[in-house]
Amino acid sequence: MNGNGRLHAVGLTWGGLAVTLDEATGGLRPGEVLEVRTDDPGAKMEILFWCNVIRHAFVGSGKGDGYTRYFIRKEILP
Image (cartoon, rainbow, N blue to C red; front, side):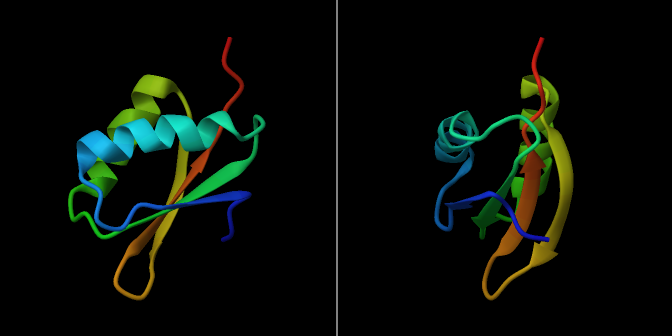
């Protein structure tokens, strides 16, 4: 899977990642996918929580070289 945008977040912890996710998804159109690359072992739970609160869709993950890739689809917000 590839994203329409990519966020290189290796080295960021949750506080920095949440703010950066907001900024990165702000530049996407509804339906587009953001690829997030991070080495934070707790990122999946944090990203799932963030997607639930913001109401975007978590659409998958995969392993990279020294990081994990997470994919978030920007949803149409009411």
